[in-house]
Length: 488
Image (tube, rainbow, N blue to C red; front, side):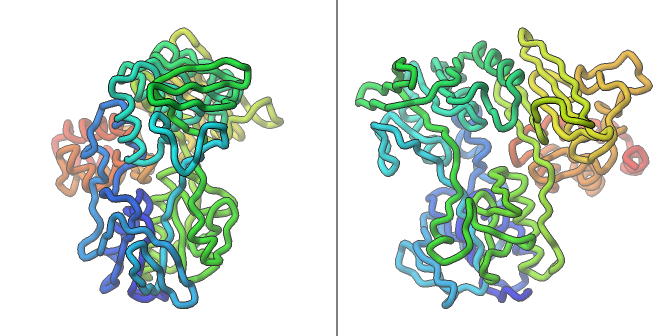
């Protein structure tokens, strides 16, 4: 073990805490590791809750496939109520006083409840719910059974996932968003307009540039009053107004807190014996709220805490946001930008009728931002180019439209044989093509075996088609030696 000693307590058994609990045992030697999770459930994949809402998976389908490492004491339903950094102890909701050598805060975030008349953030009405946890999902589904219409307040990523999930169940869904276009953090107005039209065809109506002013929840329904005077009636109201890092425990312990718990490149807080990862952590002024950075933080922290690599440092990678619901395929990355800045090359293509939109921002022959909405076969290549910082092809049409008349300039997109080993296939787990090939060479011959050996597809799941394609390509090769030659 390293400087941290051999007693490690992880506060939080969400996606970040669970990944750290899985990463530590292989490196931690004789460390005693305790995980305290406020939720009563086993660790689950929060990204997959929209699929649970849509009825595409059951609760077993959202459980994280990897359990905590052998010998780790996982205590669900146990909340930490206080931290004493001087004594290096935590107090739990059961009254236990536990000592630690190193404490890891993985407390995540909490859904925001807007300060509207008719809402009490501590006790929501029966027909009103937030969309953040498995219990929230259960609450929504219990009300949605037999419901005809649902309202979603908030047109960001989570709000649209909730809306699409409910629409898949046959509900008439209306999204209320105070901004001019949907997903304004990731999309430009043109992409937002195409997305709104696509959603309308899938049973989701968007009400834009209008805020909610009051909520009237009754036993038989709920009414949302809008700032323009309109009233929308429904059987269910889902609040998706953002997430706030859960920092109360850190703040009460005297740690440095801004929007999140402030950490350095080693994920240490202002107390060297306390770290923070995931949605509650703020690194270099940024709170990510995404799974890929959280899992990378867990990997780096495991290396540092166990002494496997005391020089390991967290270096944020460019993020890719995916919205992959039934009937919608969206990838947004980098800076969407508005307006043509000096030295920036911008290209775009829009076909609202077919629900297709593509926009690229290129600086110095490298992608600095992109929006890909709809059925576009080049989306995998665009993500790879953005992730690797590789030069874009001479014929930009190959990226906008997925095809080119000049085949000599077409990028090596679709064939796994032409993908370099360094190409990132699974963004959530940073699984590269080379890792999949090596796992196959080691004997993995099925999708389940590749997933178990690399963790690919266990995040948002949007890379499953790509992983299956690589598996199919490898399976068609006669010998592992041939596969090595082709993949080199």
